[in-house]
Length: 250
Image (cartoon, rainbow, N blue to C red; front, top):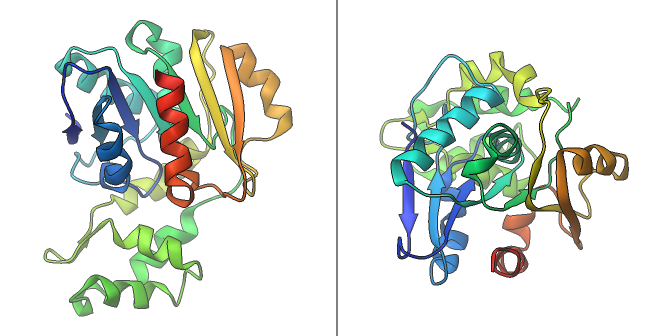
């Protein structure tokens, strides 16, 4: 089963947070802790990420099945927040098993196939000589030769096990399954719960032309844009993100 952490009182309304590619539940710790005064928050590590099992397949059907397993083990019907790849997994879950999902916040992703390949970041991580890494700043410095964006350098090094000198990411499988990660499966279904699609103003992941498709699958979809935010809108605007989640799930 997936590794997960819980925050707050399990009698409170449940909220499950599903991270994006190269992330982990840890990335959402601050938002999870803050929401836990009102909700029972579960942050998962998706397969091939964090402390969850490494498996040879990485498509949205199996990722959704992994989430079903956690939901059933906790005996909950959660609200779900999904970012990027985690947003796609959450959408597939809601479309295939709508009875298990209360409401949905999808952060900066649409149910479409994308062309922007993320494999260059796998290459960057693989180029870091982990035998020379004694502290996180060593890895950040090594990554800076291949990844210009400082916030991305810090994001990637959160998935580094310094003591074991290994990435907590199954880079080999993520690379081989990249076409699956960029795609979105065709599912003849719809989700009639409430859903909120949040977009970063500086990001092009959710485009105006995606809205018709989104509304056909998520019949009560609403849309909002975070000013001056990019794809990692929850990291760039954590307070605004938290407020949006509180308001929408209340």
